[in-house]
Image (cartoon, rainbow, N blue to C red; front, side, top):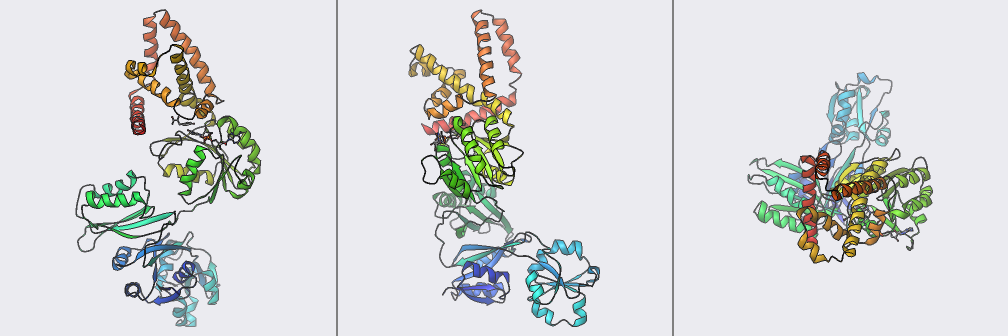
Length: 560
Ligand SMILES: NC(=O)C1=CN([C@@H]2O[C@H](COP(=O)(O)OP(=O)(O)OC[C@H]3O[C@@H](n4cnc5c(N)ncnc54)[C@H](O)[C@@H]3O)[C@@H](O)[C@H]2O)C=CC1
Ligand SMILES: O=C(O)C(=O)Cc1ccc(O)cc1
């Protein structure tokens, strides 16, 4: 049987946490943290468990010191427990204003600070190790004027009346479990480090963090402390991933060798299944469509701890069955079949779920989704402006079209895009389609027509490369790119409905006007036209485009 040490009585939250971690554990209770750490260090127990964070109190201030004393062993797991604190009295007829003292454990009192300040500002606060033992020493008289903080169940058990329930809402405590050996990867992990006190160095904190973000490793938590004696900075870092992931190992090696320049400066406290203190509302996300984009998103959503289900025309899991199981259903099929797919499956979503369309055409598809879903099903469209060959969402843009029916599930999906570095732009359905005429449909049409013109005139690839000017290089590159990827993607883009067709129609009209002026050698009129156009392109516009172009150059050159 495994043994575990903790501080607390059988009634304590720590005890509950220990049971949750290992129901069969042989629990040894210690009077304080010093003896807990000593018993773990002596090897007498397999595990130690202690609180490190509370949503109301913040971090355990002594955490750095605790871990300094755990020289052999690793942080291997966590338990998060919700605890409800209520206010009880012996005599409910006593007006609350006449309560002279409030009694509770140190944790309960500090978690209820906000309530005590506003409701019982004049009461004397009495901190006790165990409420029941302390109350036994109170005489009848003293009991009349004391209020007690504890769980509702325990208050009633001690014969008190509950005056107010849940006085410290959202009260959750995270306990660390420390064991002897490093936990194996679970596929959804986090890793924690502390540093030794750091010598002064310009930018050391930024450079340490930068090594993680450069590798796409998300930092979940960061704390700093000044070492008591030397007042040098120490850092506590919690990052996503396991220490055995190559990216994390490489970041640590680089930081020790190049940033801090001291071997062993980053102390690994441990890796463990990731803890989400933030409230998540989505558990399961299901896709209709098993194509490149569905698989791209599925992989990253799984990395966030969601259960992801893929369904399509050929999968064993039928879309109907997937819809029954998923909280969020994502339609990710070719644009031309999105509307029919939405109309077919939208009515199957139960109340309280969300339908998200991942598609390049907005107005018609959202109309079908809004019309086809129940009143309290959320609806939103996301158009990611990158293809399935992109490595990350960093520096890429996503257009998000929210509707009156977009709610917390949609927001959680949006947060996922934001977290991974995407730039998020909100549009109305119409505006999205109109802008995609310029951003996507027309350039694709031009690319295809340009290639057709090369063919008509028997112009070969090497002839273009040798005759490109700086200005013509970009459209030529776009042409090459359109013709080097999945043709279906670009056929679908050209065939999008909505206001993007207006852009193509206007283009044809304007193309003919410009050709007529050019054929007539109407140089002044052409100059006037260019001057009139220039107003649209101020310095800021050019700068933004050049920045994006540089990023594209980077991507393209890496692909070669
Ligand atoms: N590929 C890309 O570069 C990008 C795609 N998107 C969007 O993602 C969506 C999906 O694109 P991809 O995954 O790239 O396409 P894909 O061609 O790789 O996959 C499409 C999926 O839809 C299924 N499908 C095809 N016809 C169907 C029909 N009639 N009924 C039901 N399912 C059908 C296919 O079996 C396949 O599972 C599109 O709406 C597109 O606008 C968005 C941004 C980039
Ligand atoms: O990578 C490229 O060139 C793309 O154009 C990718 C792409 C394809 C389809 C979209 O709806 C959005 C982006």
